[in-house]
Amino acid sequence: MKVHADLCVIPIGAGVSVGEYIAECQKVLDEAGLEHRMHAYGTNIEGEWDEVMAAVKRCHERVHAMGAPRISTSLKLGTRTDREQSLQDKIDSVRSKLDQR
Amino acid sequence: MKVHADLCVIPIGAGVSVGEYIAECQKVLDEAGLEHRMHAYGTNIEGEWDEVMAAVKRCHERVHAMGAPRISTSLKLGTRTDREQSLQDKIDSVRSKLDQR
Amino acid sequence: MKVHADLCVIPIGAGVSVGEYIAECQKVLDEAGLEHRMHAYGTNIEGEWDEVMAAVKRCHERVHAMGAPRISTSLKLGTRTDREQSLQDKIDSVRSKLDQR
Amino acid sequence: MKVHADLCVIPIGAGVSVGEYIAECQKVLDEAGLEHRMHAYGTNIEGEWDEVMAAVKRCHERVHAMGAPRISTSLKLGTRTDREQSLQDKIDSVRSKLDQR
Image 1 (cartoon, chains in turn orange, yellow, brown, green):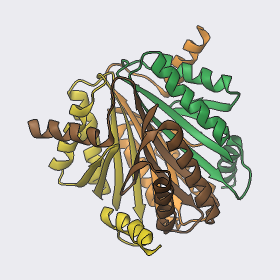
Image 2 (image 1 turned 135 degrees about the vertical axis):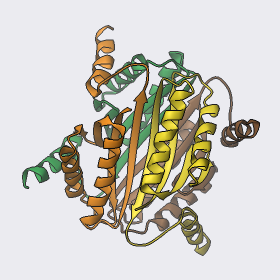
Image 3 (image 1 turned 180 degrees about the horizontal axis):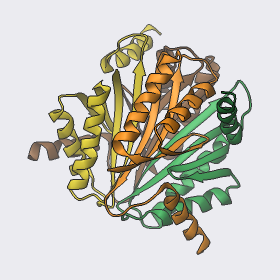
Image 4 (image 1 turned 90 degrees about the vertical axis):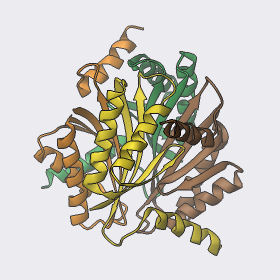
């Protein structure tokens, strides 16, 4: 089962600047070989369900290992059985509707 | 790794009434033997990370099998290394602070 | 426009224990006279859109005033035009489907 | 109060293809003159709290007016008092940490 995910990891009790932790999560996604694209409030990820989920777990493990005592993550998970669609397809679909107006 | 999760499964393209799908997800959580409590906008779940995640995956599989072509799930995931805390502990902690005022 | 909301306020850079901030948000919702019910990963709120949103803003203002330099909130917002439904109706609807099985 | 938001509007009971509704929300954000950037699972928005929230409300009103009987929105809201930061600053901050490694 393919999944489109949006991952936002928030370290708690680790100070006000969390960029170092987010950078580590980007590294985890790279190492996992997953298609991913960071935005200003999370990261879009595309891949097989189990691989995406294994990477999310590694993000928690690494962020704790870096010293954050507590993490609250928001994860969106989109699956569909009617057709295949890439992350870029979703964006293109909305853009084409805007262009048609 | 223990996790506190909050799961909100939204079937898309399956009509306006989604209660039947949510009931199925409750059944999945029961079958998994996971501590869980439904509220009006999701379900709190407590358990080992891998067991919770396996149940979330089964929710997607079952909801698709029931006929929903598309699902968008919001999942919150809380982990901490500083101490153990149950779902009820979190609620009690806030309530005790309200009582102290 | 009536809305069902689920509010989860996360103070960042304010230490690992955030119960004091969450208690303050409960007080804001009380003062606003909004129907609300805390669970272990947020708070269900029911009311007129503008009143709910004004309360969410006050939560951010108060939590900053208490000393949290940064806040990341997750807010779910449910609206419907087909019929009226209370928070409790949503829960009862799923429970009745479970009972029918 | 400035806010960084991430908005994901999900029409329910409006069929499996929701691109037309999302395109309408992009138009609402354009009309509001708000800085915004769509990604594959939502839209980053930056602006004054009240203006961003007014636009989110208009999205719900328009999507209902287009025929969707039910909407479930996920909204992330980030505020900070320690310093000013743009959406692009957040991305640049993580990228610079990745480059330093």
